[in-house]
Image 1: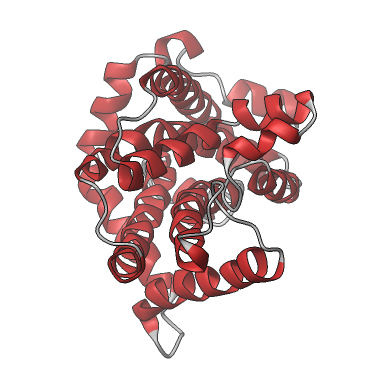
Image 2: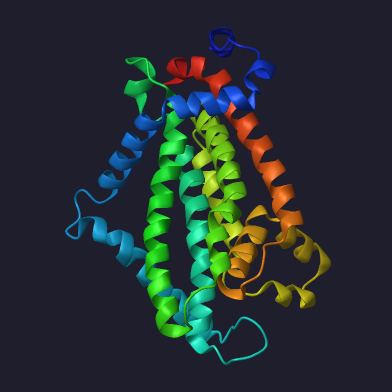
Length: 288
């Protein structure tokens, strides 16, 4: 079976697929189909529920209340050295990190089963399977946008309006979107052949949640062992969360050095993930 799959998977060389212009052109040409699948994905999440799309508001709001109570009230954690902001300040800062992490987590967790869950598109229809991951990412970003609306209302009530530098948030999010796309394509391809990938990814994302400064400030790491500090600082989600808080609440520019490094890493991962997916897709029909 493995020899048959290898022969079937022969196609364009991997190096020829590592063309950023060709990748962007391919995705742009299919933007309407991607948007259509993103809308279908959003509708499918809440089709059988009583409140429907209102859950895009209720879900982040309920999570915000629960996490704020646990970490701010029970565990008495706070951002910074002052308590002037109280629980509201903690909730606003934590919610930003939670929204960003949820986009990454949803895409990578679902990616491992995307190809397996759409066998008809693999076997019976000439379909651009590479749009499945961008569609899920777009759907997750729409959910995040709704969550940001909830966050903005809470911000206005609890601590005042966000700063003008908050307009840079899409720029801050760009590296993690590229990284998420690349990992999504890679996991979608691997998940077609190795069904245990989804279980492994679920565990890793839980570890990443704890290693991302969502409910604790980065300066708390001054008291942590060196290897833990290194692991958290090098976590690609860390700088995105920190930069998002910086532009939204501190009125300052993001750390452009870290942003530039994250962009380079995101582009590399996106290119490799896309190339790996396109190279592997010829064999999907043999394993489904």
